[in-house]
Image 1 (cartoon, rainbow, N blue to C red):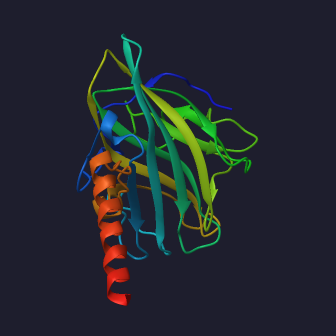
Image 2: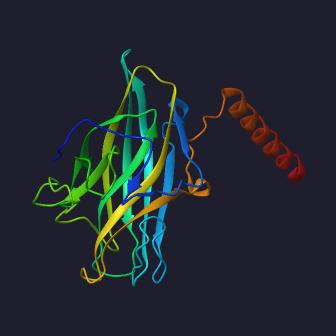
Length: 242
């Protein structure tokens, strides 16, 4: 179930007049990166103002997202990048829920729907306004039962603390492109401490050390060399025992 198809991913994230802090590193993706996983970490610690919204929670809020590029293709007119996302709410309270996530691309893209990957009752809607002030950036809103129609970001469900949700989406870029940049990640966590703390929006940073590169195929010559070395080692052992 999804709505608000085809919204534009912009180049900047703005919340309540404050710009989201730039990630430590932006992920540059192309066809050779298919199978690569980009890992994003989101953190706002208890007693510290959230980096971007300036609000201070009474509990540690955190999440991780692993964006795996499944395919990067074109039809001669447009380019398509399909992703699978594993989103985990690692917050320490038992009531918080991730109700929306967002990011930007360069060049701009449209996002064409979202699919739930683990049938857990959490659906994803596509649109804008789920995270206050994210004008011009497509966000994904988590919900169950109700839709993501609320411009204030009032999802009725989400990724609960201590759980992980898996879902997918496809980005569409106008024209045929070779590479694109993915950055300016952010999310919204609501129902913090049974809503006593309200909701918080804060940015995420890429963790290059945790990124998983696609497997590199070994050339046939390399396989032949390994086989030859293994044979020589076996022959040497037999000679020593003879």
